[in-house]
Length: 201
Image (tube, rainbow, N blue to C red; front, side, top):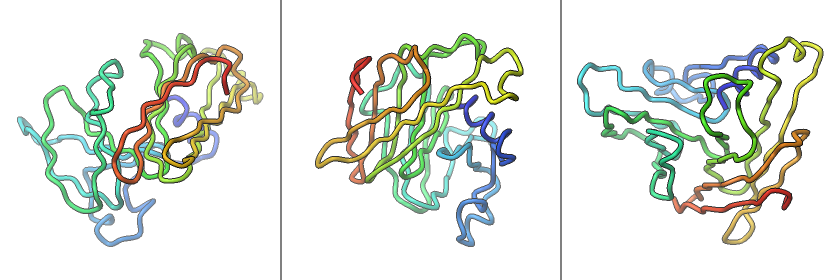
């Protein structure tokens, strides 16, 4: 997600990090200075007070909170839907407050120390989806300037609600795309844990 959003911001001449007022027109968002939008789908609310065990956060719309500590510790209890408004948020020293915006997706893979080593063998998709959400995942070789010639990969992930569950569709130029694991939170705050095996799209 980090590399994809960085490259899309670079190519589209948009902001990678932006104040809330860039996306929300309410007067309160104009005053918030310690929360930031990150890419198209996330809002970050870091603890900036020394020795604090949490912080107050303002949500300009309903969002899903992930108290992020590591990708490996994901489970259905990791995500909490929070209502629009002000909240006090307790946070452990090893947790970061990552908020997922409505009808947006966050795509993760196993951490690596460089972009060229990232693997598509297993992707994890986290989303807060009422009806439908789409995400375009950008990727290139992470080494050369071939992206300047338009040489890169795009994977479009679309999650659609179908009755009481969700369906994922994938359109990609990545030949090494493997399994996809989904944690999709619905409008009632319920987490749907789904897995899509390689080749079953």
